[in-house]
Structures are given as C-alpha cells and as structure tokens.
Amino acid sequence: MLRLLLVGNDAKSIARHLNLSTHVVNERLRDARRKLGVGSSREAARLLAQAEADTPKKFGDKDFGYPQPVETVTDAKAQPGQKLAQTGINKGILVMIFSATMLASAAFLFSMNNAAPSGAAATVVSTYPANGSQVKAGPYKLTVRFDRPMAPDSFSFVQVDRSTYPECSGKPEQSANGKSYSLACIARAGKRYEIWFNRKPYLNFRGKADAVPAFPYRLRFSVKP
Image (cartoon, rainbow, N blue to C red):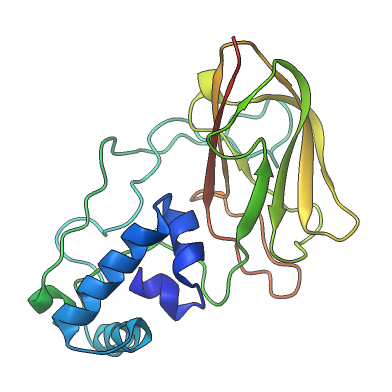
C-alpha cells in the first residue's frame, strides 16, 4: 500500500486495485504510521522509499507480490488461435506479513507484480459489466474505461482459465476519447466469468502519453440463470 502511495494513488484507488474496502486500507495505513512513528501515510511511504534505496527488495527465494501465473495465460493481442507460452502460478491466498522491524528495514513489501508499472500509471475507473455484478444472458459489450487516454491498438485482455474467460469475438474497439476499449461478447446463463486487464507478463494496456503499463485489474461477474 505504501508503494502505491508513492506512485500517486490515494486510499480509494488503492482499495480498488487490491479489491479491499477503503476502511481496510485506512486501517492498514494507520497501523503502518503507528509502527513507523510518523504522522502521515505519505511520510511512511517516503521512509519506505528511503530504506529501500539501500535494502534489497527480495527476501528468501521469492519476491512478495502477486503470484506468478500458473495456468495458460492468453493475451488478446495475439493472433486468433495462437497459443502463448504457459508459465507457472502459485495458488492460494497471498499473505502479507510485516512488523515494525521489517518496515524499518524495508521488508514491508507489496507490488502489483514483479515488474510493477512505474510512475503515475493509468488505472481502471469502471467496467461493464461492473465488478461483482450479475447480468442477463445474451450479447453485451465488455468494456473497460481508464482514467486517461490509452495507447491505440495496445491491449491485454488476459485469460487465467479457459472455462471462465468471456466468449468474445473480433478486435477490441477504442473509444473516440481513447479512454475505453470494448469487445463484443455473449453471456451464457449461469456462467461465472473472470478476466484481467493487464496481468504479468501481459501489460499492453499503456498510457498514450507515457507508454507506462496500466495497473492490473481483475474483473469478475456472473450471469443470471
């Protein structure tokens, strides 16, 4: 959370990125301030950045952060029928453990992935269907909208499981203002769907102005029986 603060996010956008409530984010940031003995979350984030300048960001065998992909992950930018390389994933719950001592030595670690976007990365502000919603069966436009214009013809609609990936066809269409991408899809009754907009190693949703990859975003929704 402190790292997300460093790149310009506030509590609301951090909550959206991590699929947490704003209340939980504020509680954890308050805990970090208490343990570091500072009066603001921004100051805590600056202490982390200062400590990490001289401290390795890797402890043990693996980096902390999102688990590496395990199932076959498909990039929508690939040609139809093309099968992309399969990489590994660790399933289960991602647990973040920290203490005052670890924080002081920059072991309070969180990143969106092992090569997290740098700078003020673009963020998803809305989707259709909305995250966690239930929609009617039939045709619909799968849409993702970002907080700024995105690079043209550059996108990653990422599949983590073939059985839950939305049934879509054609090429994603970008809106006139450049902030949205849409795909023509069909919702099947009783199905549950999951799709990521950017997920390592597929990070082709990028800001138009700076080409920085957008923060990964997971969308889950279901269809009425």
